[in-house]
Length: 430
Image (cartoon, rainbow, N blue to C red; front, side):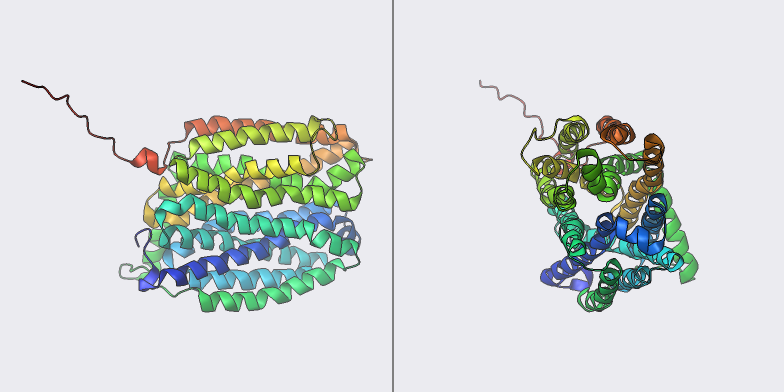
């Protein structure tokens, strides 16, 4: 199907509604992704695990999210979003219900299911936005999709944190979120338009496997795809690993900040994403170029991280540093547009799956590494500012590396794809 074409002739408004409700699913699963950061002490007691054990349990989300990105991308290319996205939402809901039991074994399965099902939210919304809505607004729509996700990330801290502090039991929170997710799956099934799957050669099962394999190979062997995934991952881990897992404790332990204030400060980062993702996507579409926006935003992110780790307290107004860092790190979504523009249009879902796989593999692999490094640096005792600085300094060099890798990207924005104006020979007069 051509970019910008509606499935089965469906009205543009219906497709836009499908994108919107799928983005709301992304908002929902992002609440579940980020909420654990504000209830670590409660979960530590509830599960009877050490802080490292809790970090490993929560990290199961990314161990599922990363590989199932490939499954989701291929499935969305081969079947309609209506057939797979609602199933993803139901899977997330079941995962939340299992997590609410307080049993470590069932919670491990539940956290894995949250990641496996949750990946269909982003990839489904991106597929609908980029394949069936105006191509000239690709980066803006993908940025807006991530805006919903980070709104959920902010709510998972800004709203859930005070609720937990106010007496809401952590397991009751997960039970309620699981109950909410089941009707959401039904709404997704009703609102997402049906679309006939792409025709395949004789022997449909084998044909689809071959098509999926070729698509996966084509995207993976494209060096631009790998660059996009690594750049997105390096710009994303300051949010997924540092802020959403350790942000609250960093502010409490390194700066002696009260819990309620630490939650609000930490939540300013994903709130910045709410602004930065659509804003930077719009700017990229407006300029018609991707690389300058990525490089400029990454440079701002580098400065913000340096000030967060090494800057004197009170140097800047309250919330401003986290907010600007969040806005700048929103550039991590622009490679999601680049990878789709750098690959064949019919491989759009697979390309999104591949970048998500690389991106969140980085988070899945480095999350436990940073947790273990922090424990070793502090000797298992009280954690101080210098322990956090030594542990998370590599995030700075990761952002610097992302800038260098962006310079190697091929520019895919509309301005770079426009044909050059023909050379006009000077007129001669007799």
